[in-house]
Amino acid sequence: MSQIRYRTADVDGFNIFYREAGTPGKPKLLLLHGFPSAGHMFRDLIPLLSDDFHIVAPDLPGFGQSAMPSREQFKYTFDHIADVINRFTEVIGFDRYTVYVFDYGAPTGFRLAVKHPERITGIISQNGNAYVEGLSEGWNPIRAYWEKPSVANRDALRGFLAPEATRWQYTHGVSDESLVSPDGIALDNHYLAREGADDVQLDLFLDYQSNVALYPTFQAYFREHQPRFLAVWGKNDPFFLPPGAEAFKRDIPKAQVSFFDTGHFALETHASEIADAIRAFFAR
Image (cartoon, rainbow, N blue to C red):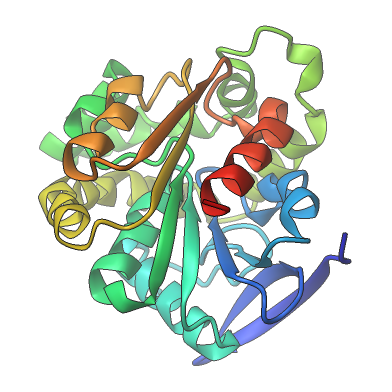
């Protein structure tokens, strides 16, 4: 098992913090986290895969230890985030890689794949959605904001940023909550409590509709390029439903879909099982 190194890359003047492990020369693996987390969500997975891959896990712009400039200085949209991460991969020399996507990491990673399909050697989706049937009714308050972006509808979403909401995301659908470390929950809440972080996240809630609009584009990429595709899905996720995982096989018939009896943050309880699935799939 290699050591994990903690680095910061200058991406055209934007600082991206990232974790790096494994041996250069091994297959490259880019880990993209989701809301409201950061690269620390991969803290258990990285050591399990570091003998098999050269791993990089960046914190997305506005998340974790990466820069969080003001909304006046940086437009918080998924297009902009994907552009920064695309340049990040170029700056650090990740020219061909498998991308692991979760939650917000999915529309980020799928944008990278659409823009540069020649760079993608495989995709691992852990509750990273690209189909409307994968969206649960839990999205209804956010959908209301898309349909009417009023101050009232924006403020109605602030509950998603509360500490108890973060804990609920980690524990919902988990049969044994004692398996869920409080550390990740506390760290995510720390980041969410920073000045200005609430409005950054509310901007991204509004822009998430751009991801749904791109679902047909993502699906066309899947059909045309047939990437090696593994879905590892917490089946009790309150936001991204199992039909969204199964739908990948409609466009990528050789995709493998594996479900785990856990919730949204599946790595909190099933990191070892997910690592085994990744090694087995990409050893074929």
